[in-house]
Image (tube, rainbow, N blue to C red):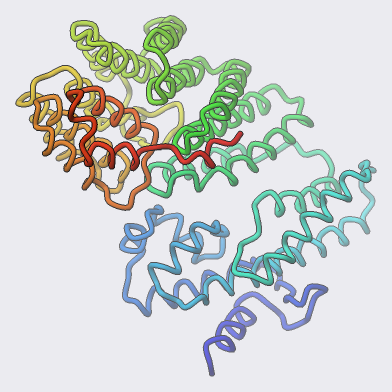
Length: 473
């Protein structure tokens, strides 16, 4: 049996009953999901390559538990995930083909569900011409993707799903636990995956949570949805900052702040303001703006220890160090350390809980960043080496940020050629994020005037320059 016939047979045997649907796909057997076939093919290819779940997770920089859910057919992978799996397992396009078939079957399953629900006696739900047009466009996106190697955009799938939601009517349970797991997964992928790749998915989920908020009046559920909205908007802002789209990031942070305040969760509100201060620092806003935002976060915290309060002192330390205020920066680091010592383990051990985590490497990062800005080479080298030794290697962007700080320390010690070479050879092929652009600006500022014209300095400027196409709002 050739490769294509094997794929079709495997998908059909895993999740289908053999009958053809309107889109040429297969109907899904009761109890199965359209992605069960994809999971089976993924498992076969992983076994064929002799790779464990954890080894595959390290290669594609997704958590092994997420990959396990893909293999079980419980969660559909994103387009980026499928691309990463194709590269790691070298399947010759098989996974992409199976994914497209699964999406076709998902659409057909949803159509069948809508037809079934329409046959029941349900509360009438209005549907206007605009809804029809949105669903028509979404269906066209699905059809277009089926003829290529593209994967259906999340927004298109969600538009199609809205037909089921209208047919079902209002619900009391909106799956807050699942939304919180989604936020956690985004946070994990944001620290380990390609820059900007999460923007479409996060934006689509923000829209969906907004729809849920529009039709939910339960105060407790609304508070939970507002918290999720704030976390998603904060994640979106970070992705936009990394892509250089600063104005859109600012708009996202405004929404994150309002949603956090409306949720009534003070710790989250403090964290959002602290991250706003960090974003202002990394994107080159004046130090007074950064410090003003940290003052607001610190005042709101009222000395209650939280991840947000630690983040606020971190941003304050960076801004003061960049201004040359060694005493103020060290005081802020000391305050951060005192807050960290008072944080519960749930905050210091959960690395990817947006708004409610401040792990140990974050405290080390703050000290290393300040040291690179204000200390002599001997001290900063020691702090940076100690921090790198404790930093989890899977946090690829964090490791690259520390390597850029090493280059900054060398330049400040007048080892110009060594510092520039270290910066240019650090993290080869890894896109430059907002933090590294800020550190680069400190390197350029630390260079003697004549050294700024060196070819290596010009190469560093070019490497970290914003792509103007990524700045469009």
